[in-house]
Image (cartoon, rainbow, N blue to C red):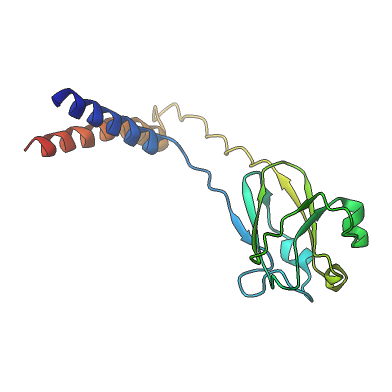
Length: 172
């Protein structure tokens, strides 16, 4: 029993240390057209997408009238001509709330069939890899270390201190 408790504490401390040390890169979920508009006619989705950066791992969330519209992924030629005859993928689930993962670095082209593409229901996005984090500034020879290095040096000991306090609290 006691060995199991120590193992659990060690695993908790290791997990906490990993959480504190690993930087997170969260994916973004874009509601196509914005929260108040969604996937509908008479919206310029080129304007909506302009200035947005779509990265590998992001999601597009299409919200629309499920009884009338759909979400089709097509090639560039079919996108430009609003041809829905041969989609690469039909993302329509029937609920009117479709999520498309952007998990490949490339251009994506979406249209709504049934003639709605001609009313503006088309979206093209370019998905790119997340840019690398900025390089750290060189160390100042006079100070010996940067403040960020100091913070990282503290994270692991702090994690172990928290784990030790937790272990002492549990034993009381």
